[in-house]
Length: 308
Image 1: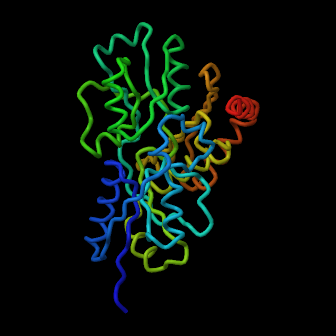
Image 2: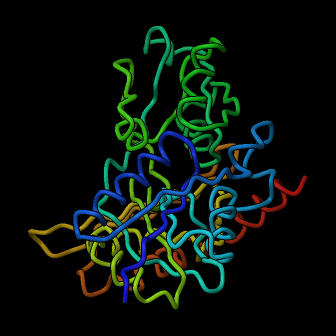
Image 3: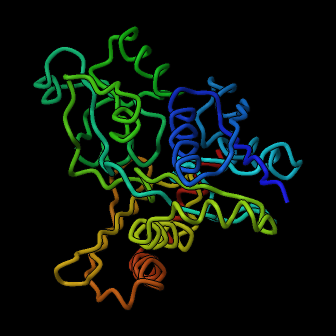
């Protein structure tokens, strides 16, 4: 039987294409034939509304999911933090690649000392907005949408003091400016810095090929973070951060999770360290603790606020 060509679906932004080409090279190094198919997503086209107003968690993944279900592509490569915790029927997670930088960074214009006064910071993420206001309640936060290149340009054009980005995205396409600081106090989005490959569940040939790219440590840590998110019912709309790290010396997992009110005034967090054997339910149990300690009320408040 002739070996089939694996068609890699991707959005056509520079970062998405970088991710697709990275997977293409890894598959071709293993001897597989591949082809890249670029597809535009609604998240790239509708730039005038905040993501949470579009009422959809998978805005960046939906178009590729449809292309896959319709048989136009065999796999899709995503920034894992953009992928809804529940995949569409028939689509499965085939591999999680080794994780890059997990941190958020602030790209600032002018002088970083301006943060001490009344600054204007741009981000399209509720999680970043809430954590920023929790730390800097007197700052103004404005909405910022578009792909990485578009957002960088908007920062230059608008006279804001700074904008928040995921470090991994800027590093991948070599856009990291000198005028940035790492926000090590900000808890990242679940699965930030990780790339995931999804495929159709009955496509054994493709799943077998792609599964060879899986990084088990990243898979476990992102599973914990996404389970925490799913249990809190966050989708992409609530200010939720989560980060799991494997400690090789101790064979333990360290987990930090956070849920905030949209205005950043309320913050519920959890820090845990468990034996590696307990990883499968760590995200679930951590989220349950948050829900019991005021998180359930906070989540219902957030949902009501987003409905307005």
